[in-house]
Image 1 (cartoon, rainbow, N blue to C red):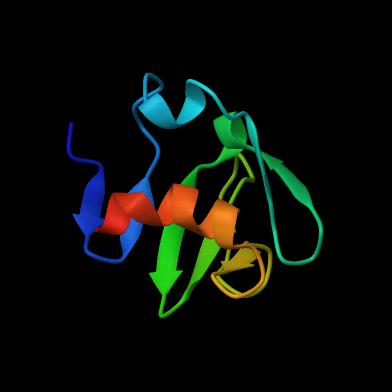
Image 2: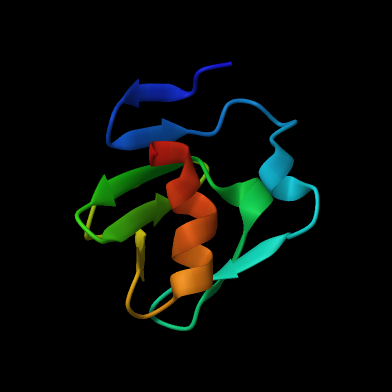
Length: 84
């Protein structure tokens, strides 16, 4: 299933993603731990990702979690693979 609505957004609509097979949590730049099952969508912004984990949606840069390549490489790499 292609979850990309454009090249910069990933919508989590498939609950069987391989991403959940081994890792259940990631770390955001503000040291928040995010359950991967709670991610609603991801927006790529240069070398950072905005992650929405609220069930009723998010506003970018207001209530999204930021994950940047330089701050949290492992979390960034895990999610960024959907944009390559």
